Image (cartoon, rainbow, N blue to C red; front, side, top):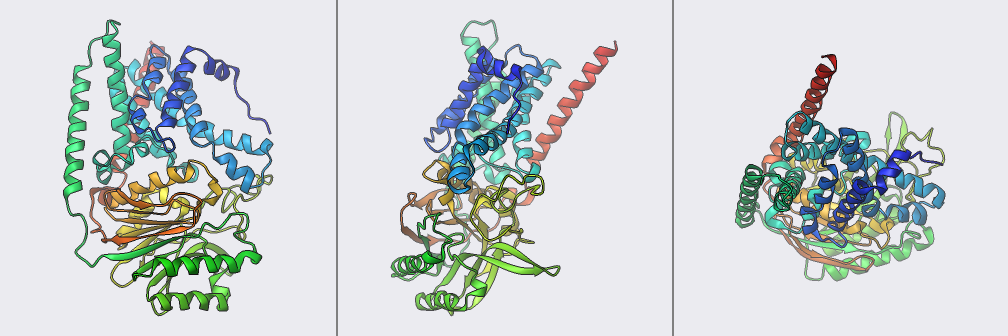
Length: 521
């Protein structure tokens, strides 16, 4: 399989502009876990902005795309672990598929810089156009062709709690806009200081300082507000079985898997807990079809006198056809099945093959049972004192799903995942970083049970109160206070991001019309 790369793009990669763009991409990648040098995000775009000076819109697109290629090639290196080690694809297929995704994501960087340059040519300052365009294209890539809302600039700041509290107003996009604006202002300051004959960006600097001061003031205020309900706290136990991916679905390993979860559950629940959570697909069989194994799990819930939530594949009839689902079941302290939540947003190539009739050379990359179908709607599971919004693995990266659950009455978000197929890479930590924003956006605590890590408890402010390492057997326990289900983001959703899309489209249209008029004259 060959991926055509134009000569001009290759040349762009290695000229002065290209090298500066690559430097920006490297700095962006380093700001994400791991190593997680989040402060680099605030200066990462400066080399890119130098490369964009006096460029045409077409060159700006190529420079931006070069930056995106270097950033995502480093951030998503772990895809090759997924493809080769667990998907059993040869390197000759893995590398092209990985590069296709990198090029796809890099294109949005290119579109951002291209539109920003168009705006500059018609007299609109980059301090306005680039942050707006960057947010617009980040938002578009979050839903276009299934969407991939991974590693947006704002996600790099997940540890800086006072800064990211504005996620309950505008989602992660508000933080991304601030980061891009800060890079532009710092670039302009450096140009002015260097004696390039450029005036100091007094207005832009004043606007940036006001936004940062306002953001931090709001953030510290939110951190001191009691944004939880007055209901009784819930004692939770999150179990990390650390079941190897290559034996997870082996019938010969089933008994050992169940023994592991039983042992860890009894140890975690010694002091008494209200809710026990096992990870995605913790039960390596169809809970619906295995009465003896199902009774074993029901008896455990009775013994612990706790609600027990666990991942299991499920099936149901839809239009006369058997449909497979990636699901979570919840048992009561009496061992009764209280409900099932089905995964709503499936992983392309992992749980189904998009355009499978044409992509016949790609099998599903995660060992499972047939192609899965998505659940039909967000249904919280009721444990009496509160309702739980269940997000399975990958779907926690999509903010609209968390919103749907909280709007439907969930006051605790539960993320269950199996990150074993990421291997020993930075991906589990990137996954955790993204999930913390769901708690802030909805002002709802999030608990996360992962097969091989990272298992964690995140409060309504995005603070990770406890977490495990990866590839270690264990558990985490703690108390969580259900959220109140109120935030501006819950009400308006991604309206600010949509506004950025409209403004970006308007800039591009205005630039096209002006160019057309000039050509006509």
